[in-house]
Image 1 (tube, rainbow, N blue to C red):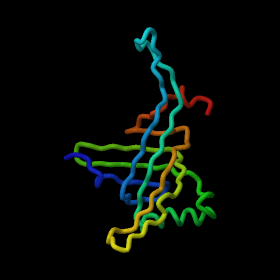
Image 2 (cartoon, rainbow, N blue to C red):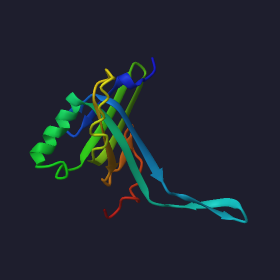
Image 3 (tube, rainbow, N blue to C red):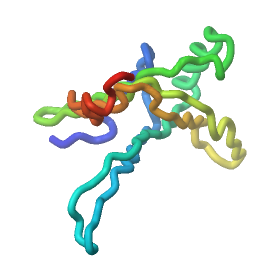
Image 4 (cartoon, rainbow, N blue to C red):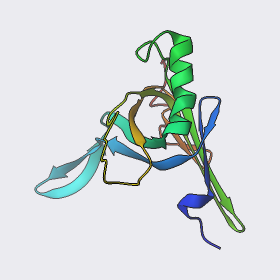
Length: 147
């Protein structure tokens, strides 16, 4: 059996949520060094990871309660996001460190639609543990030294 989107569980901080969709992309700005047009080495560059979570209203209310407890959406501290998928013979775990959530697409009403309401939460990874994929950190110990 192969992993599908239905096989994943998502934790945003201490909240178990069912996502309508979730994406995360890493930008790694390492650059190739060339001599006479031939690649000979590379330099390290900065990294970033950002993504978007789409939630239905019921699951959005879990995060909204955390924002209320914090005092406002902007007072909400970054959350760790854990994504785990498992089926017989395959599994994947992705951990995103200290994700700063924002709200986009707060409301999109179409009176002719029977689709459920969804809210998008874009995020940026802000923690030095950055991204861990199946137990392996994306960044090296050297990358995060002295942080």
